[in-house]
Length: 192
Ligand SMILES: CC(C)(COP(=O)(O)OP(=O)(O)OC[C@H]1O[C@@H](n2cnc3c(N)ncnc32)[C@H](O)[C@@H]1OP(=O)(O)O)[C@@H](O)C(=O)NCCC(=O)NCCS
Image (cartoon, rainbow, N blue to C red; front, side, top):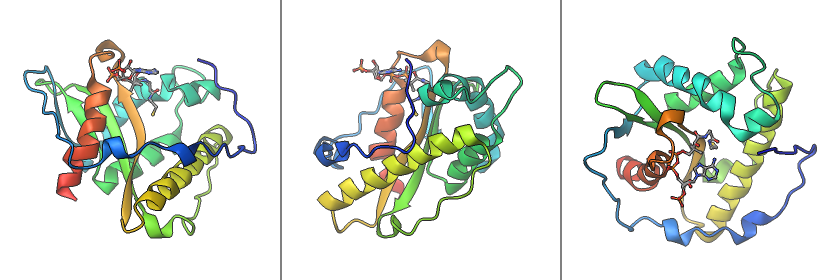
């Protein structure tokens, strides 16, 4: 899918109609048994293994990364995206799907946005112009999405933001991404 990037980003006001209520806590967490993988939190010690997964899949085939040709050759890397991923892992709210033999087949990197500080959050300088474009979009979506949630629930302190969602190409179409999102919505919240 080709994605046309425009600069500056034109605010589309799409967040005004954001449908949030169907994801409210209180809906049941469907625990899926007898799957060839299980879902759990990522520890700091597993950062490199998670990065390996992301370098192989997400960095190469996520539509925005593809649109800006983030990874130009089989050997090239985007250190800024790696650092962005590591920062999310360090926060301790990211999860992955792992097979019984330890293969990572899905990754969901999450970050908590402090609702009260959305306006003051400073944008870190990014030296990679391609990734800087993507960051600009992510920050815009993070800010607008958070504002929409805070508008509906003014008393909440923090908002969970899914930053990266990735499934191994061999394991796509099996519901792993859906389950990672479900765990983020209902499972992770139990530990906060
Ligand atoms: C997008 C991605 C994470 C989906 O992973 P997956 O485990 O195959 O997804 P699931 O099997 O859980 O499918 C979940 C739903 O999303 C839909 N879906 C899956 N991939 C999709 C895509 N690329 N575009 C639109 N919808 C998609 C599925 O049809 C399914 O919907 P349904 O249940 O109504 O049929 C995977 O294709 C991927 O890693 N892509 C590259 C990275 C990326 O684009 N990440 C998303 C942005 S952060």
